[in-house]
Image (cartoon, rainbow, N blue to C red; front, side, top):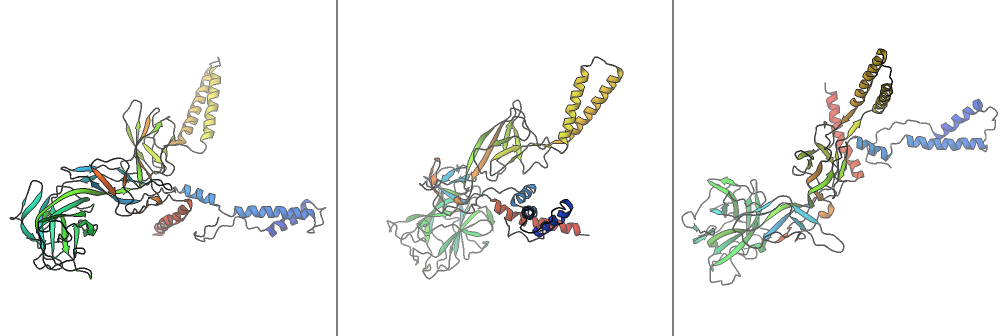
Amino acid sequence: MEFDFLPKLPSSNLDDRTFADLVDECMLRIPRYCPEWTDHNLSDPGITLIELFAWLTDQMLLRFNQVPRKNYVAFLELLGIRLQPPRPAQTDLTFYLASDLSETYTVPAGTEVATIRTEQQATIVFSTDHDLVISIPQIKHLLTAETADIAPQRLCDPMVHRWNCSRDREWNGPQQHLFNERPQVGNCFYLVFDADHPIEGNVLAIAFKGAAGTPTGIDPDHPPRRWEAWDGEVWRSVLLQEADDATRGFSFHGLPNANQPQKADIILHLPKSWQPTTFTTYHGRWLRCVLSEPSSEQQPYTHSPWITGLSARSMGGTVAASQCKVVVNERLGISSGKPGQTFQLQSIPVLDRDENEYILVAPPNGMVQRWEEVADFADSTPQSRHYRLDSLTGIVQFGPLIREPNSLRYQTQVRARIQQLNQKSYLSDTTDSTINHTISDTSSYTTVRNRAEGLEHQYGAIPPVGSEIRIVRYRTGGGRQGNVQAHTLQFLQAAVPFVERVTNHQAARHGTDAESLDQAVLRVPQFYEPAIGLSLLKTLKP
């Protein structure tokens, strides 16, 4: 096989003889080894045999001067190259609660959500990467500003002495305008939430109670405003779609009982990273609504909306998820006490591990031990509790016993000395010379034994005989099939209390299959060439 991508370096020609050279060499040897052979015509059967064997030898030399693919793979193994496991697709799952909760609720990590199963395709399962905490939001301040600065400085708190908060965390008071009486682009108001309640990643429903019949001058279907949350670096958009604004730009247009005070929700999907921040003297988690420049399809605000009440509640939350299944507390087997023993995981391939994924070894009469995964046993000592896990095959291997060269020869000498000592022990003659000879043989035997034992090295500890081996947790899955479309992950594998529905508002991404051998061959030169060049520079540096 020819690797066109490899650099065209000059290759060593170990034997440069051609077919003609081989034939000529054989012809020159005829007078020496067979002088009676004088007919060297091409029709002679002997010449035909010479040409046949010259052709066979030429084919052998051709293979001899090449490095076949098998040898190239062997070189990769010597470098410690292993095929990379598949990568799981990533997405965000949004869980919606069936009702409002009076206290903080947690959707546990590892909750599995799958696609629908069809006749052509099996379900694709995603698992949440960590706990989703759905907390109780508490509004501390409603602030207004003339301009929408990155870091607000000039803020006004018009409700500090006018509004009150009831027990159900609802703000009420007299009519309050949200923007200037004659709104301008950049006018905004801020909602500052209590920093002690972790509501990052939550889905908030902010209920606005507005005055009836207040004109705003906008097209309710296309209000020129945007909702943003400060994530610590930038203001991020949190209004997923216009349909989530039931106030229709605070116009409350189309709601029943138009002559009565109206109340409607705006559903906002908060960023997963939403840390408390201090602007001026106000501290908390910041949310704002900004009047934006109207487009050709929008009408500007001619009058500021007026509200008489405000409240917020969590109706769900969003959490990161990966295309994988989580296997917990799997029993691998019982240790035989032998070096290099291996165990097979039930599910493959195995995804990259984290600090919560490891193996426990329980000796028959001892404390449970936590063992550490390593890439190889090169730096492992006989006391190191190390193991290696092949991500593609799912094989767990413990430390091997490596026998160095000449070990077998020395062990043969040891057995020979033992047999000699056993034979001498049956002799009845115990003269001083025999005893001295026996002592000398024993000393020689000990020396040989020590030499033999010194040529064997245990890389990594061995689980004691009879120890039960378990893996606490690992994840299996990954691949390109996990790159599913938006709104396809809707089925909980197991019921979760208080959760009504779940979906992925964005398509999954970054899922890749396991690395093939051809891909590894492409990757290795890119990985090692910079390191080799750096080593050469260090060597040549004066």
